[in-house]
Length: 153
Image (cartoon, rainbow, N blue to C red; front, side, top):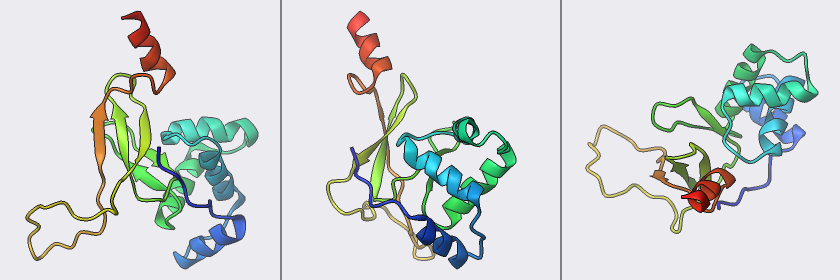
């Protein structure tokens, strides 16, 4: 599993938002804390349901706007797997994602070497800024759903 750098504190989050011309709000802080509280890869709808538990007045639009701001200021990243809903990841270390084809869960996995551009022919007019690596397979024994399924097979 990939390890996370220290999460951004409230003051630091305020600074990161300000650098992008965005305001610090209690809702953005709350959405960020929800993402840090459970280190999985929730969709916006899942973040909304979790945020609503302790902040019942929060709206879906506020969650979407907060997630957008957190992505823009670089404390959360979007994870897009195939054609599914966008997921959100608070692990800002360079890492890959393992996507289970059976249960649909997404897990962080460490990269052995520092990330670099794979040997591909990138035309000179393009500049690679980031690389997203998604591995697909089955998480046998890693999660309860797939581990349980294997035991009954």
